[in-house]
Length: 190
Image (cartoon, rainbow, N blue to C red; front, side, top):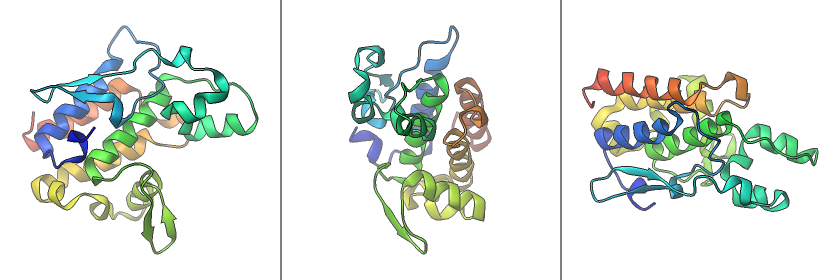
């Protein structure tokens, strides 16, 4: 966890994000349900490994919103408000991966509220507003911006696509991996 919040630089960030996206490779696995930076462990070579995979079915429904990150996605919040069982899907994992990507790019924790002209907002809404306004560079960590600002802007856009409030509008994880790889190839970080 601490490694993900240190300044890793574009090549390492790309490596971590690509391997994080790769867990959706065929055959498609069941949803992780709790993909977050704390569940991406880095070994001595900075190779990422996904932890807590497969625990989703073991969590009892009333405790799931507190225990699993996927239950914070917009579709899960809406279903929970109707007191129904939340279907965790591959698109929920895409949302969570988008949040992890935003953590890497912004250097902020997802729950870290930021003050802006419109008041407090979380990192997902902050990034979405920046993309809408064409000011993506404002959300990028200065160290990341100095190392590869153009690539980071593209990664912010990908992360915002991943965190779209409508699950059907999000890319699947294979598409995310392809988009991140294209950014990495264009920046020479592959």
